[in-house]
Amino acid sequence: MPRRIILGLLLLAACGPTQPPDFSYGGRGFQPENARLNLSYAERNFGDMSRYRGKPAEAAAALAQFEAAMDGMRRPNSDIMFPRTRYEMLLSAIREVRGATGIPMEVLPSVASQALAGAVGPLTAGDAAGIRRALSNPAFTLGPDATLARLTNLPPLPALESVAPALTFAAGNP
Image 1: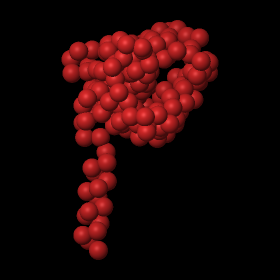
Image 2: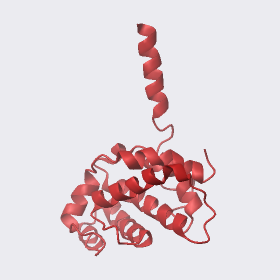
Image 3: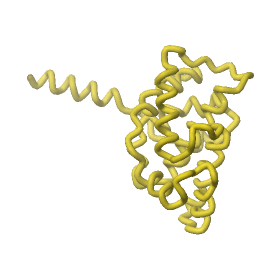
């Protein structure tokens, strides 16, 4: 019996992300146009969204990264190969993120990424007026107060977390 418990705990430990988030992207900084860079940090930055509860700036940064990666993958000149067997999972993640942030599905990923990234600075600085201005962006249909509440306490995002390893793999960084 103790052996089973130990094996179970080891299995659980192996399932979690192994590295902490890195929003400096290895010192390169957030580059919305660099889909491969955004994807290479996918598992690391949004493989466990629960760690951003109470951290709206980090939540906004992770979601901006996801939207930027989606924008890059859908460009005609993209050479990123995402497994077709995971498309449904990816669509579920997109719907889940849009539902959590109140951003309609019709909004382009580049616009969603810009809106979320535009909120990171004021959220990090605790600039109340800047936060209100950033979250008054028309992309956020819930309004600034409700959007801030969502970013502060994101609902569970299991589809996003589940697709993160496949996104990292698609970048060529398994």
